[in-house]
Image (cartoon, rainbow, N blue to C red; front, side, top):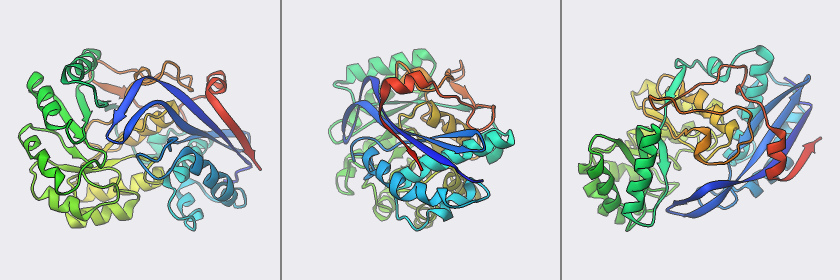
Length: 368
C-alpha cells in the first residue's frame, strides 16, 4: 500500500439538541474527515477528537496539528502492506490516539475497497446486525429524563445509558429504574468522582444495572480496582483504556469487569481488535461506545461490534439520533429489535455526501 495523498477536512456539525455530560454541555460536534488516496481509490476515516479537552486531552486542533505535521508525513514516505502495520509506522509519536485512529480508519476503508471486502469481513465479524442502545445526557429534572427515556423506548431502543455526575446520580437512576423495572440500564460518570465521593454511588448496586462506566479519573486503573471490590455491579472502563497495554493491566489488577472499546480512543481498529481478543481470552465482555460520530465513524463501530465478544449493546444509535443531516449518503436505521445492520459493501460501506460536507466544513488541506 502506497499512499499518494491525504486530505483533511475539519467539520463542525450542529446537534439536534444539547448534550450534557459531567464535563459540560455541547450543542455542536467537531470532527476531522480524513481521506487517503491510493491508485485511484479513496479511503475515508474520522478523527473523533472534539473542539474542547473535556473527554480527553486531544482536541480537533491538536489532532489536526499532529496529523499534518507528524503522522501523515510518516505514511506518505513509506510503502507498507496495510493498516495493521500502521501502529508501528507511528509508534515514535507519543499518544494522540484519536489522531492516529482517524488516519488508520481511512487505511482500512482503502484496503477493503481495493480487496472487495467489508471491514466486518476483514476483522472476522460474526453478526449481520448488532444490538444497540442510546446514551442520554444529563437533563434538568427527573421528569425530563423520564420523558426523554420514554421517547427513545417508543422509537425502539431497548437499552438506555444515562449520564451522571455528583448530585445527579442515584436519584435520576432510581427514577428510571422505578419507571422501567426490566429495562437494560447503565450509567456513565465520565470520570466525575473520586474514590471517596464514589461512596455516594453505593445505592446503584441495588438497581440491577448492566454496568457503571468510568466513575473515577480518566487515567486511573488502581482506584477502580479498589472500587470494583466494593460493588457487585460491573465497573466498566472507558477513558482509562488508551491501548491494549492498559487493557491488559486493568484486567491483571481486577480494575474492571467490562471494557468499553472505542476505536477512536484506543488508536484505531488494529488496537481495538487486540483489546477484543485479549478480553475474549479472559471471558471479559466488551461493548462499543460512541463519540457522536458521523456516518463514517458509525459504520466503523458497527463493523467492530460485529465481532463475537461484543456482548452488550453499543452506543451506536441510528443516523437520525444526533444530526439533522449527516455527511454520508448511507442512512443507518434502527430495526424493530433494537439492532442496526452491519455494512456489507467493501471497506466501511459508505460514500460521502460532499455537498453536506461543504455545508459544515471549517477548513481543509491536502498533503503533499
